[in-house]
Amino acid sequence: MLHDIFHHLSKWQPLDTWIVLTAALIGMACVLPGNFLLLRRQSMMGDALSHTTLPGIAMAFLLAQWLKSHGYVSPETYDAFWLTALFVGAVIIGLLTALLSEAVHSLGRVEASAALGVVFTSLFALGLILVRLVPGTDLDPDCVLYGAIEANAATNDGSAPSIFYVSGASLAINLVLLIAFFKELRISTFDPGLATAMGIHARAMHLGLMAVTAATLVVAFQSVGSILVIAMLIVPAATGRMLCDRLGPTIVVSLLVAALSAAAGHVMAISLPPLIFSRLGFAKVGSASTAGMMAVAAGGLLTAALAFAPRQGVVSRVLARAWMSIKIAGEDWLGVLYRQEELTAEMPGPQRSDPQRSGPQRSALPAPLVAQSSGLGAFISRLAVTRLRWQGKVVAAAEGYHLTELGRQEGRQLIRAHRLWETYLARNFPETATHLHESAHVAEHFVSPKIEEQLTAELDRPQQDPQGKSIPQ
Image (cartoon, rainbow, N blue to C red; front, side, top):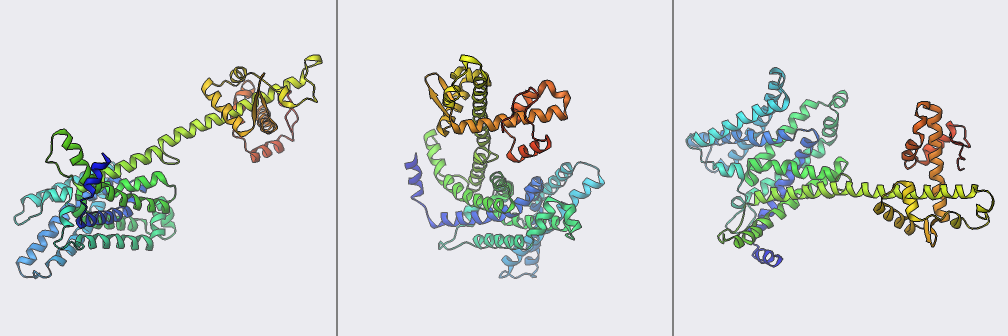
C-alpha cells in the first residue's frame, strides 16, 4: 500500500505544490477568525457567513458586469474592480447577517440560533436564486459550493497563480489585524462586560470580527467553496483548543493544523482514490477533490486530538484515571502494611516481635491478605505492588510483603493525614461520626502538606484520633 502511495506521489508536479501552498494559506487565514468564533461559541455564525456571503458574491458580480457593459469599467481594470467589489460585498453581507440576526433575536423574541437560522437560510436562498436565474451570471454553482482550487492554481508556465497571492494577502491582513487588536479581541471574547468597562467597544469588535470572517470566506470560496469552508474555519481551531489551554499557543497550533490539513488533504486526494477504487473495479477513478480531502484530513486530526490530547483526550483521561487508581491502590497497600506494623508492635508477651529486629520482618503480610484488607482487585493489586517494588517502598519475602524504610515513611504520612482528617471531622461535624473512616480513606490521598499543616494548627496538634489511635508525628 505504501509503495502504491509513493508511486502516485512520484508524479508530483509544480501544480501540486501550488495547490498545497494555496490551500495552506487560505486554511491558516480562516483559522485566525475561526479561533475567536469558537471561543465566543459562535461557530454556527461562521457556518452562516459561509452561506450568506453567496448573495454578496452574486451581486458584486452583477454590478461588475453591469458597469463593464456600460463602459464605466474598462476590460483592463475589470479584474481588479471585480475583486474589490467582491470583498466589499462580502463585508456588507457579513455585517448585515450579524445585524439581522440580532434584530430577529431581539425583536422577534426567538432563540439566538433560531434567528441565525432564519437569516442565513434566507440569504443563502437569495444567493442561489441570483446565481441560477439572473441572465448574464456565469458563476458555476458547483465551484461556489465546493471550490475549485485545482483549476484556480493552474497556470500555463507553472508560475505562482493569482489565487496564491490573494490567499497570502488575506492571511497577512488577518495576522496584522490580530496583532493590532489582540488585547481587545481577547478581553471582549472572554468577558464583554469587562471590555466595555475598560473602554473597549465589544459590539464593534464583534462586528469587525464578522466583517473579517466574511472577507476571508470570499477568498476561501475559490479554494474550498462555501460548504467546506466551515471545516477550515472551525475544525483546526477546535483541534488547537483540544491541545492547548492558552489562547496564544492555541492559535499557533491551529495554524499548524490548517497547514498540515492542506498538505495531507492533497496527498490523500491524488493517492487514495486510485488505490482504493482500482481494487473495487473502478479503474477510471484517478483522484478526488483536494478541498474535500482537506476537510477529511482536518477531521482526522481533530479525531486524533479528541483521543490523545494530553489533558482532554479520551484515551489520555482513561490512562490518567487508570494511573491514579494504581497510585491510590499503592497508597492503600502502604496504609495496610503500616497499620499491621502498629498492631504487631502493640502485641504483648511472646507474640510481639523483638523491637530491635528490623521493621520489615514485623510488617510482613501475605499478598492476598493485603489486597483483601485494602479492598483492591487482583489486577489492580498486582500493578500497585509492582509499582511499589519498583520504587523501593515494598519488598517481597517468603512470608509475604513488607515495608522498606522509604515505604514506612510514606505510610506514616498517609496514616497521619487519615487520622488528622478524622479528628477534624469529629470536632466540626459530629453528625458524621459514623462515616469518619470512609471519608478519611478518600481524603488521605489528597491531603497536601500545606493542608496538613493547617489541620494540625487548627486542631492544636492532636496526639490521638477519635478512636484513640495515635496520630504519627
